[in-house]
Length: 65
Image 1 (cartoon, rainbow, N blue to C red):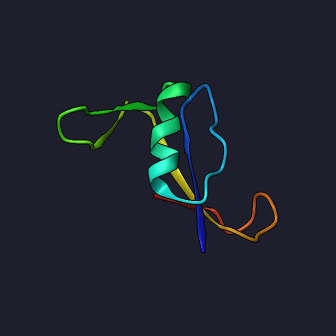
Image 2: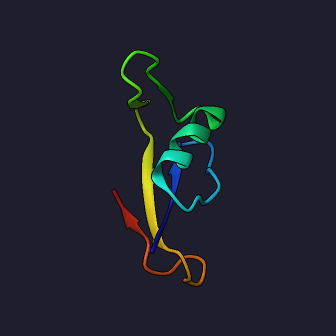
């Protein structure tokens, strides 16, 4: 299983168990916004998505998306 979080140059989001939840909360840290017409997440410049294993030690085996 994977966990997801968005990172901006100034802030780091929390880890979430699914991508949809991570997208919903990404707007709160200024990582992007959800388009109300399409429902798609639009990331701002400099935003990165990190994907990590659900049961890993912090900082190990992170994969930038």
